[in-house]
Image 1 (cartoon, one colour):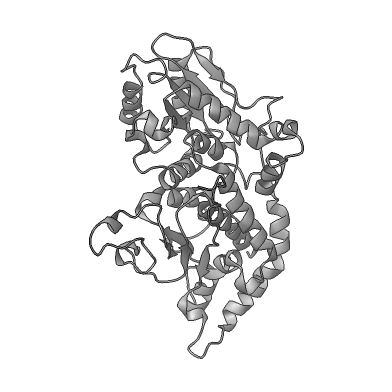
Image 2 (tube, helix red, strand yellow):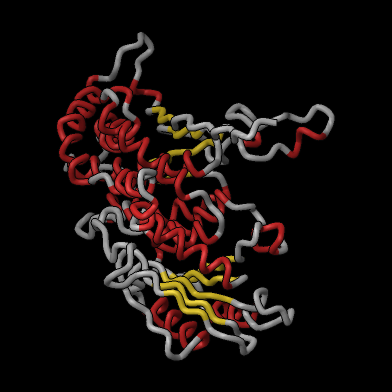
Length: 401
């Protein structure tokens, strides 16, 4: 057996525009071509404003000339805190506002075992169980988690639990949750608010020593804040909980960096970010929509509910000055995954070795009516591409106003 580990594939995602963009004789609709040209004119400004946060994280972390340089990087700091939490506790409660919590839920549901929390610790690779709390939860949910955190086994590690607060937690419910769990873990624990990430606190409820890991401070390698358009996307607010759960955050960042480069370098007519950004305006122009530009509604696989919540919270908030007709106008973008990590049906006679975009059971329940997003597989690199594409497309669309 070769000692070299195979490099996982990094196939690009694909965006298919609405069917009416291309006429029967193969010509582009003039309105589509005009919108693409408009988006092309703002692409450079959007790329400059969006920055290269993911590429900067990878560049600093990937330095091999000096181990000290890697240890000084923000990504190393995030991974080091995650390691400390994994080695200290067996259960973690993640608390965040809607967008931050939704993004964490998305990463956990797409990149972890579907029943990660139900597996014994050795089958989780020594990673803790993770439960998330946000403004949409109620008091019974909070009390249920508190009940589940009580000591059960008598084992010091298995009975230990931790709290990870992500994002600023500006909403009253999440602030109350932070105070409640901090007081339960350790009345003296301090929580430091920051846009990117706050703190990881671990406590042993069985009476043993308390472990407190402060992940953001004046001299910590994790930056206390990043540009607002990046907040909660590829910062410690999402990367820390993902790393605690064992998700390959380096590949996630590599996927995002690949999409950022593709946005900057690919021709406009073959650029998924550019075409995603103009779909709403093309639909409005093609139908002469009286309610203005419709907004994108993602229709992902069922377990990806966090993607819809994150996109709605972060990028799709309607203009408060808009009329109800404008607010309600939307179009659907189905997301299809060509290949999943496991192939359980391959073991039965006549079973398929893998699910493809043509498999009937893999098609979205809602019939595609406009554009489509095709993902080669369900993994960290693909998800990084998708999140960065959605973020950049929203920025381009806003620049067209």
